[in-house]
Amino acid sequence: MFASLPMYARPQNAAAHDALWTLIRDGLRDRGIAAPDALDQDFRHVEGWGREDLVLGQICNLPYRAVFRDRVTAIGSADYDLPEVEPGQYFSQWVVRADDPAQRLEDCDGYRLAYNDALSHSGWGAAEANAERRGLRLLPHLSTGAHRASMQAVATGEADLACIDAVTWRMAKRWDPVADKLRVIGRSDGSPGMTFITRPGQDPAPYFAAIAAAIADLDDAHRATLGLRAIVSLPTSAYDIPLASDPAGYPA
Image 1 (cartoon, rainbow, N blue to C red):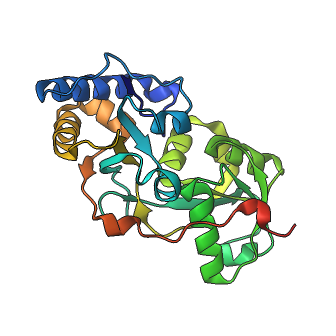
Image 2: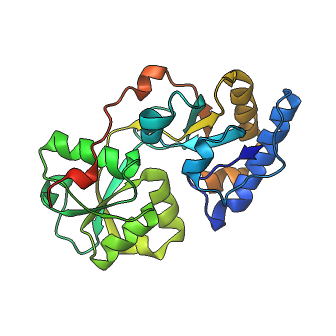
């Protein structure tokens, strides 16, 4: 059995994630669903999504749409209490260096983009869609492997611009000094937030109930650390978003 909540995991919130999992685990067991004692946060999240023994995971909406939609059971979307989006949605923040002259995204035509992964909606899919809608020339310059690495690349001048998951940015402002070297100049549109998933062929209802109860029962300190407000059932049509292009195919 395998369970992981990898998408926003970091040392500062490990205890809160463990507390959340304990409540979810016990709720699953109370509903007749076997669940491991502890989260496995050392496994690569992409590999975890496809495991046949997956009890609970979290997935970004782009890899879910592109690869895993028919290979997992979607349970519901995590609501991290973000402003100006519907419950269960998230968005990304466009960031530049603090001393960059750009005041809005439209000032960034031709900027070099640092993106975490070609299968990340927050770091790449939302960036491409936003740029195309504004008629901007996007230069996907550097694949960093993580939002935090993208922020560092912009701060050091390896890149000029990054599109950062709003929950990650909120945590960075709290815990990462690199955020003080950056400035937000805009945001992407809302889309489904991190989606709780389990292995295929499962009834999502008892999983949803266990997660909802666990979030409600989480103590105030851990809830504040995670910023997690609820789990939301989104219609399947919410995930009907065009797939992102391959950033490697963009002209230099």
